Image 1 (cartoon, rainbow, N blue to C red):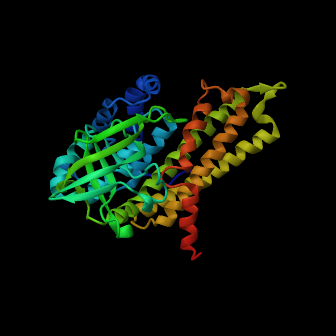
Image 2: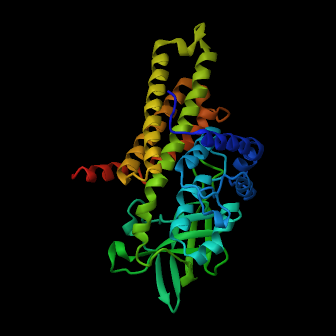
Image 3: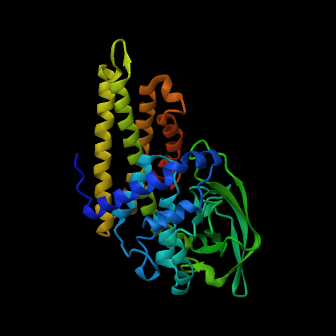
Amino acid sequence: MKRLVFEPEHEQLRETTRQYIEREVAPNAEKWERERIVDRSAYVAAGKYGLIGFNMPEQYGGGGSDDFRFNAVINEELARWGSVAPALSLQNDVVGPYFKTLASNEQKQRWLPGIITGEIIVAIAMTEPGAGSDLAGIRTSAVRDGDDWIVNGSKTFISSGINCDLVVVVARTDPDAGHKGFTLLVVERDMDGFTRGRKLDKMGLHSQDTAELHFENVRVPGTNVLGQEGRGFYHLMHNLPSERLSIAISALAGARETWRQTLQYAKDRKAFGQPIGSFQHNRFLLAEMDTELDLGEQYIDRCLRAVVDGELTAVEAAKAKWWCTELAKKVIDGCVQLHGGYGYMNEYRVARDYVDSRIYTIFGGTTEIMKDIIGRDLGL
């Protein structure tokens, strides 16, 4: 079904993204996968292609666009390529907006130019060993000392944790204030007491560096408070819908490409003297996948239109996140089955997609959390 949400300028960026992947990502993918980290130069290259900071203010070198459809185009093309690529969605969709909307003018002058060029890689540190989806369980603390804050604690599962230059740390600044007791503090790469733990050994997404971070008496100047003191939880809640929509977009686009390659495999692979796709069960299965992917894309496109119009709600984003990520998991599992034994071999992309995509129903809020958000909105 033809998608009506995109306009010519979005398709131009799609072509630019494909050129970036062909010239900058594809030649290095095997190396990044082997070394289990993407070269920092890939972010600088993305900046030169205009794939970072297009949504940042023009006075700092950005593109000045608030159109989330540009974010969607980049996410779709990277997902179609595969998992071995820089985490541009983290830079553009997840962490970048905190700097864009919450930073003071002085902070913007310090940080935004480097973020836009890709020379500064950003991360956000929410999850802790004892606090995942329940952000209220965060124990990392920040205690005021004059004009500074002293940060202590540990974070885990931090995307770009090894590569990052700036990390937005969610810290408890008032232990007795409940949700009003959190503040966002920007910790910089070379601050004393800030150390990176092990690069985590994950099931999939091997080239995407994920790490533990440790903070031992890290002195963070008051000028590195992002947003308002005590409003950290509310800042997070404001930005999470766009992050969840971004995950849904990537999950669905990746699943669509896995399905496309599986369709071709079903036409080429023969069993009992005929293509395996010609067997009724397999034909029905591929038809079901195609239909469900189409339906998911239409909901995504409606969400994109809602973002452009300033109308996307947290509940609508939660619906997109849980439905599309669970659909992606279902579709890719079915594609593995259609490949038979070859689907279990890493030389086939479908095997890598199977493990790489499994995280989609977990990060950014689990499927269960998404359903809880939707259920509470029903008054239950």
